[in-house]
Structure formats: C-alpha cells, structure tokens
Length: 198
Image (tube, rainbow, N blue to C red):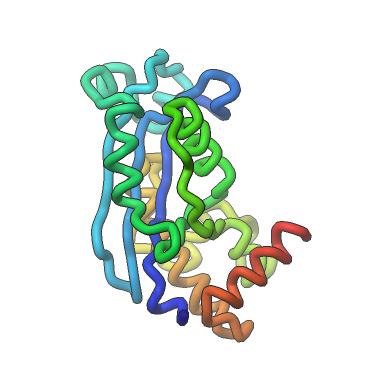
C-alpha cells in the first residue's frame, strides 16, 4: 500500500517523569489521525497520574497538579484512546522517539491487564536520521525538525501541539523517502528493520 493511502496515528505523551519503572505516569495524551495529508481526527486528554507533578515537569510542560486534579485516570481514558488508535492491521502509529511513548503506553496496558495492540510503529526521530544529513539539521530533536520542515505548529512540550508538529515532520520525511525509492509501507518496514538492527 502506498504511504499516501496509509492511516497514520501520530501520538505524543506528556508524563510525570522519565520512565514507568520509576513510578512515573502519563499526564497528557495527544494524537492526530491523518491519511494522505488530511487530518481525520484528533484526540487530547489530560490524565491524572496519581502522583504529584514535580516543579521541573511543571516548568517543562506547564502542567501542574491543579490541572490534573479532575482529569480522568489512565484506567478511565485508556479504552477511549485505544479505540481512537483503530485497527492494528490498518493503522500505523507514529511518535517522535517512539520507544518513550510506546513504553509508557505498554506499561499502562500491563498495569490495566489489557493486551497492547500490535500496530506497526514508526519513529520520526529514527527516520529523520535516515533521510537527513548533518548538513541538513544539527540534530533530530522535534523542535529542530519542525523548524526544518516548516511545521505549522511549534512543539511546546504539550501533547497535542507536539503531535501536530510531528505530523508535519512525518509528511516532510515521507517526501524525502520518495527520493530513496521508499513509497510503500512494505518498503518502509524494511528500512525500519535496518534502522533497528543498525
């Protein structure tokens, strides 16, 4: 299937810390569903992680305890979010530095005793390193790539803004992939295997 026909669900999380293993939880979920450059839907919700938010995280994201006090817990919001992700055989998940976001979502699934759906996952950070050189960008941070690809939304360390910025980065990367003769999901999966093994 040509990449222009694929439904991508581009997601971003804000969290209370660096890893689920340290007791950190999800504080905000943002996701944008796109196909062929068209936005099909968006998802955004605060999540009460059940732990206090540190001053560092509040300074980074602007999210504080008061904003999360009446937010749903991950148990309450998870089924709705999984429904938004859609069919694992049809939709492809996208995130910037995907192991971070997917790691938190898998940890939530384990905690809630859900089976995590087996979507194909694309990491825009890894793909950017494949299609861009050091002459193009000094690094592959989301803010750098958003500026390089003239994203319409600037990353702000807020989930929906960052997901929207990642959408524009994804589209820029897909255009570049055409120059590498990568235009289908099958070809992209082969590249991903090389990126992971490399």
